[in-house]
Amino acid sequence: MGGADGTRVGFVGVGRMGTPMCRNLARADGYRVLASDIDPARADVVEACGAAWTPVTAEAARSADVLITMLPGAEAVAAAMVGGGLVDALPSGAVWIDMSSNSPAAADPIRRLAAARGIDVLDAPVGGGVPAAEAGTLQFFVGGDGAVLKRHRPLLEVLGDPARITHVGGHGSGYTVKLIVNLLWFGQAVATAESLLLGLRMGVDLATLRRALADSAAESRFIRRDLDALFAGDYMTTFGVDRCYEELAAVTDLARAHQVPFELSEAVRRIYERAAARYGTADGELLAVRLLEEESGRWLRTE
Image (cartoon, rainbow, N blue to C red; front, side, top):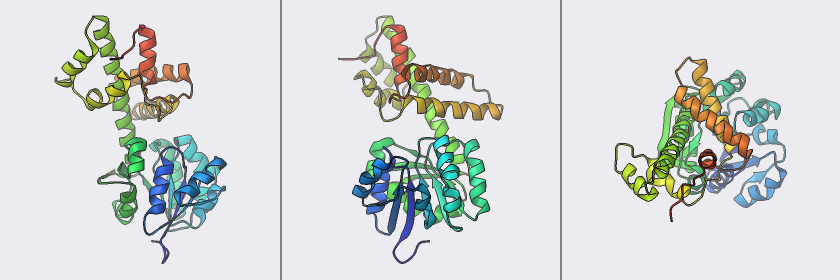
């Protein structure tokens, strides 16, 4: 893989997550990064990262040993890979690593197009958010051939915590696991908010209730850690509420297609659907909680 001058990496998608990832890869030994984005204003950002820039996304793939896509969702991945010509531009023998939060159903036709051209594919969505992207400690849920992952693990270790790069199964498994992780987090957010709003309505002090929950069978990482942001009025503005809804729609569609009972998760999806309708494309992973606060007429805040 790669030549004497290092592995040639095409990096498409330099937004909030992609920018620090691109920077970490460009500054690591052994990688030459050519990045692109649909927003031409990202050129200066890319060059500040130490990577080269091309305004034509297909050019990022044309001579790449590895193509990384870090895009907002399934539609953006399809638009870049098929509409933007990335699949056709990639040389035979290259590997495409999709680090986006994608849907296995949406990605599979693109994977088949790539495979027909002799291109290996890994789905490797990430966990940890912007802080982990900046620190190079992302978590990876990897689906695909284990031998392909083994060859490209050094690249993933530049971007993530080596102990948290997990091969979860065949093609599509990485997408599925990431969707499940997000589903459970969104579900915890909604269930916790509803519980706190009831406690508040019944006259229980929020801080006291939080301590009681954290020291009970109901304790969770969300209660221990993420409530700090909510209680301070921070709805976690690193991700759009519309994107949260899209991910929930993807995972509930997947369950429906495979005839898995998913009633509770469907309820979470509907709440986020209402939040997306209320707030549009506003950033805030916890805006569904704000919706519940508005509807109850009470705010989950501590002094």
